[in-house]
Image (cartoon, one colour):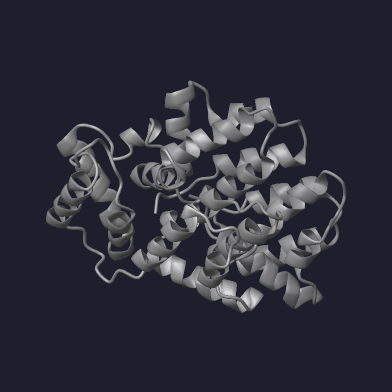
Length: 323
């Protein structure tokens, strides 16, 4: 683990940046050489103090062909994770007309700790003068993801941080009895599902679906792949898959976004930036196990050479702690 940068080092870095604002390659090297993203935030603060200029605004608003993508990622490294998630949520809802990125929202609602989720909602309201939950509820046309997101929002307010095997078994049994055990074939009781999603913490929900698989020999969403498949089942299947193993979801999502017909760069940026200091070590391990290739090599193979590719590679290779 690198030592935290000293105040004098921050000043030297700011001087170097100030004299080379147009040198994107240097900026990539400077910001990814910091051991933690909070040190990037310190550089932003010191730069503002020294030059009365906001590096975030400079990089976020810079439009220079392909460099704009690189500058956008660099700018996101300079803000708090909850503020970054607030921006991701806003873009997920409003960036593309009539095309809400529900997967990006699920990553936030399921993949963040309750304390962090509360800060995201605060940052969203402070930055955009809007309420995140209200914006989701107001999406038109209505979608099953909205119901699930609202239930998950309530689950983030669950007071108990402890998980209970007993509660997990009871909830798994309710899901079975209102699903597989019903006469006439598999059915899904949306009311029961939404009630459980809204009343249990994210760790408790994860335990419940693991217990379901242990007791009944298959995942709760097994039957969602056949004739019972519908919009609500599709959304719930994605949520359960993410809940049970986020690193595996991210590994597969990175592969899909890199190796699809067209590279989905916005998804790559979102996942790599948000996970570079949290789960990246596990994501890389799972990616290699599944695809027999290091994630770093996959990025190099899929993205054209340049600062953008170098930045993504550096973020996936940063030292990190699994929080």
